[in-house]
Image (cartoon, helix red, strand yellow):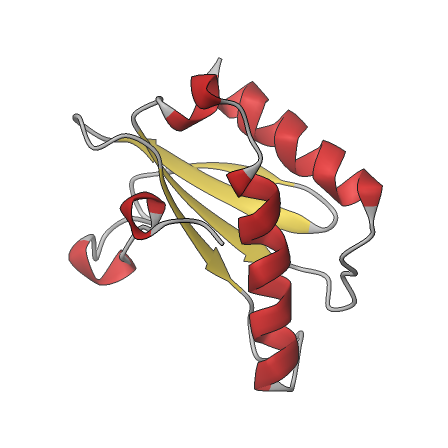
Length: 111
């Protein structure tokens, strides 16, 4: 599980979605904005419209957080606030393509 130092609280930044850059993929959308000196902060949002059961929403969040935890330190040291909104409901833990897509999109954002 990703440690709390990397979690981003959207309640602190009310206008985040108005001032951020966006990248849309088939499985998820990435919203990001540079921060001053807090390091990488990430929030995962799984809409109730896409995944009805709370246990499935939490499982999806855990999958994304575990993939992000395995990223290299080069990405974790960047000063970014990142929000990932999941568009696809049936995400499995063993989906290796998802791992490559998440890593690729985060690397592209940090460059």
